[in-house]
Length: 501
View 1 (cartoon, rainbow, N blue to C red):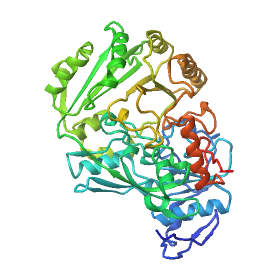
View 2 (view 1 turned 120 degrees about the horizontal axis):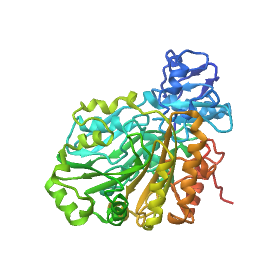
View 3 (view 1 turned 45 degrees about the vertical axis):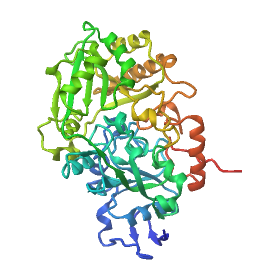
View 4 (view 1 turned 60 degrees about the horizontal axis):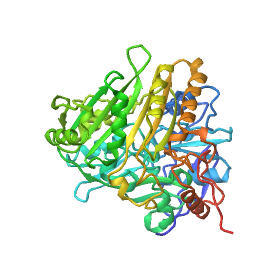
């Protein structure tokens, strides 16, 4: 692929971008895409997709400017401009960033936000079972556009429609179809990106190493992704959902213990997520919710549950048949009779103060560990612990096919999530989640203790908190050294460059 070059006469106060070598821009309208601190729309643009309101305080470092590109050349110019002026570039697609590193810095360095919110087109090709998705689209945009054209195709990614595709896909992408079709990253056919030199590259021109790295290793460490070409997967027109809630008196801990023994080995058409959460009736304590999706009709779902997990006590009345897209809305906690356009509504993004951490269970958790988790809810007002099952297709994909090592042998992912309204309770809540994480140390993955990169956690340290094993981290660092040796694409938990001697 022929490389394009850009000559830019750009200052951070006035962004003038020229047309060179066939690269077209809109210089007359470029000012409409720039938001500076002294403009009235700056704060609105900054806060538009921030979900963790811990990072909306006056003390949170603010960008020099926010740029909302609408063309590929705008992204190219942003990279070259920031390099020229030694300004850090933070790329934001959805804003669902647990630690806010896509829209803030920790060390107060000068930075700008390249906000892809207006670069979000989704083009679905039903005949070839593909979708071309621009980097600023949300998962909801993708799900809506697919469902608007077909009832028999879907895409295996996360359950929250307001999450941006950028971080979700490039660091893995786990959802209800993970046991049937793997990760979102496993279903990427091509990537179009801007590299550190401002070149636009695709799978063929970027080379195998970089194409491998951006599908699970976190694309923000290497480039700016312009678009993803995705493989769509077949889904049945009728699927079955169930939600069963158990209390301590119902034997919840026993049932969770049984869940962890069977969830990994269930048929790949069946996904059951377990959620322990605080009671919503104003009293201290917990309940367990078992959220299931069966890719088929209710009679078959009931037969599988009776045979493989009778302890949950699922009855025919618990089973609800619906279309696949209705199941997507149900997991998003939208009414299933809503118009599917609701999936594209970014205003439904939930906002709160929260802190999260994650683990991987590679061995069964002993009952002592389950009791630690259950009893922890007596100390807080609003918390949840999610168990997301693997197995199925995930156990069949080789560990190094993409930079995501949580494959065969990873029984389930654990997400610890705590939210609060009163800022004065922040320290108490931080202590709760950190103490719980420390208590779980003997029971989860070791050497290294692994985390899911999309559940970013700065407690793990700078340049940590990735999906990777030690060997995989070294390979990613070598790729980084090849494509970005000066570490322009840096954030506090990005891949550091490792240079060959």
